[in-house]
Length: 491
Image (cartoon, rainbow, N blue to C red; front, side, top):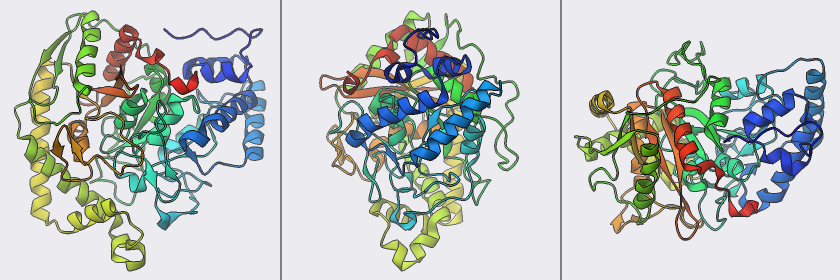
């Protein structure tokens, strides 16, 4: 259950108590003027000072005198009864992929090292308008490629439960910040599990939003880019919903966003799931190689859905998964090459690209129009397959990651469960199903193995049913107590 907000005469003003508050409780405490925005900022900066040297999650920090001046102005606004929104006074650190005005945006690439953005992406624009204070950026791998957060600009981000292991990616910095209470909530983005993998690796909640629910851009191309989405990361589901209430909704600059006038992310998440049918997809009938122990943790977690009154049935979708994988490769590389081909065509910039980026560019540039169309046809068939499944089952369940957090010094796992990985991202194949269908997918924690390394489970909902996914995720958390599990680094 949510903690009560300490009363005004209690220890709510102490830095340790402030960072322990959930985001929803923090917002209420700020608006009740039980804590000041300056106190909140100083508490989170102290937490960043405590942990960031170990994990390297926040990069490009902003000058602290300017941050304190901004917090003082937010306090003055609150004293006048002028709240900017639910994030009023929240320290935030936008992911270093999309532009943030007045901040360095490197995309993890030496090509853009030191580049200061002149505009905000829509999500960052909305977070600022709601009262966020941007203290720095969260680290990301180069161009967000790969499920492990490291780059030649800022180095490697390390796991919140074991700094010798990977934090996942590409929203690895965000996931670690949430797990170690360095931020109350965090934004991220997800193309190939970039919110779900770090959520699983750091035992937090990460939401891949449905296509068009949250604006992702503006970008140079507004119609064909449908895979990358922006979304929230948090310690619990009400905190996810808090950030969703700010960042979701139509934007006229992005024609594929939907208005969602009937969705109120500030509404109650409570719901009765008695009689609801859920489908457990497991390892897709043996298709997915999964590290020993991951499936066992996921399967053990299924009982929490059953305690809610839901039924969980083992189902294997009737589909050619290998054809889905190759369609994914073509569509992903097509989009990446279209966006970044100028970097490849410039010899000086090409030599600064990591091998995985070169691989994506070469693959994408080698495709012809009919190959892209065929991949889109397979994608459409997959959507129809899941639509039929969702007519029987409200949500589909499968692992968020096929492996536990691996050694931070590795670039990527070369083999999983004895099977050699033929690409740098094959070990993440479990996440492509939701992406290819444009469906909402929430990664929830399922516990840790004997070594203390976390794992996660995806809850994949029906088309545009982001709120329903949050409701099921919240009910699961209340039944399992997942959000009460803390990093051992926190003490």
